[in-house]
Length: 188
Image (cartoon, rainbow, N blue to C red; front, side, top):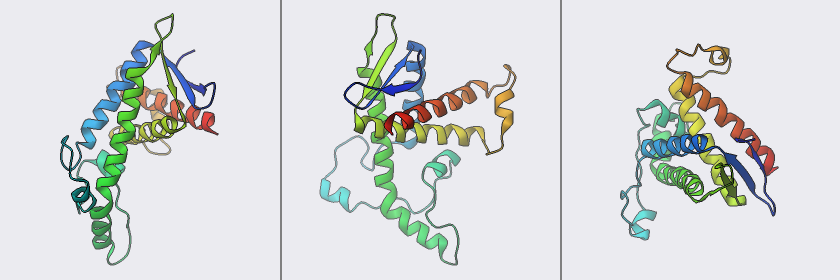
């Protein structure tokens, strides 16, 4: 059976995907990487000391999906906007970098995965790879959920007609939830 994480021998987790599933997961991760964007210096290496003192943005992203991935830290109070801007200025670059690294680690794991005799892709993650994959899957699911405007009591998602243009993204959203759930169970 493909699409569920299982405990790997020696620790970590293993996921077997058919080639289409692997392609979809990789493609969605790459799209999320594009959404998050490059680091402060683009793809060129920065001076580590300059990176340490680099200041990030002070305004929340306008894109709702990015705003969900990088929410304001302070929501209430008379100085909430000022405090949120200050907090974002010193934390968002690192948070973006971590989200990029997690997604890129999962893309690399998919690229390095072995094919079994049936042509399925077998992904094996160590404990660090599991942690990174869980973060990337969570970020991707938050992004899709925001794009789909998912709410807690949104039972409509489970009964969309096949003609609905949201159906493929809903299927991916639900599948990612299953991946997350089985990865968490495997890590426990």
